[in-house]
Length: 268
Image (cartoon, rainbow, N blue to C red; front, side, top):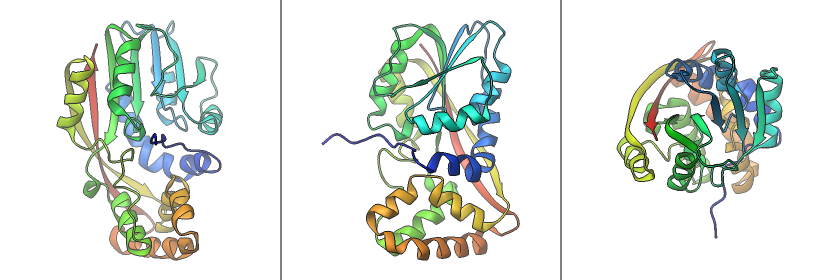
């Protein structure tokens, strides 16, 4: 049986943006766009744009004559992103990284934030990205590194596993499936990319409260769907215990959470 991609749908995309976007993803979006060289980038592609955090930064930095396409696997995510990035400079499109609907050598720059690890066959996705990049084209993307360095995810995982006996984080595809930098570099080389490199990026996310962080973790990610599938009656207990653990471990009003990610750069 084929492993399905991780899809954000229903109410999850709106919760993802409202509860997690400003705190977990905005700092990394600002960092990632600062690393992009838009020189000679006449056609730019963002994969898995999500709720548009990185998309907004790209649109602001885009050269005047560059064409920009932003894609996601989820139509619901794109709908949220459109409300956050109201500009006619973007062509929005549904796209699956396992089967990119673009011609060979059609983009100068491909960018992706925190999504490649959610694809069932990451090497296949990298090969597809290599195919659609022009010779000399650039790929930049980010992934989370080890779970232990990302405390909101680690604490949430511990609470859920203690209550229902299963871990939502130890799966591939999953948020920490590409936490091994050397393995990712090897995959990039195998896909054909020349001299791939990476940087480690740390920051501290800040939530207004432990309650907000707990609610966002459960309902702004497919974690809630995982719990509903495995043990729906446990949801109130999980939310209460998660909020308590976050408050005692990371504080409250505000809650500050350490984060660590990897940013990869590769050339076709």
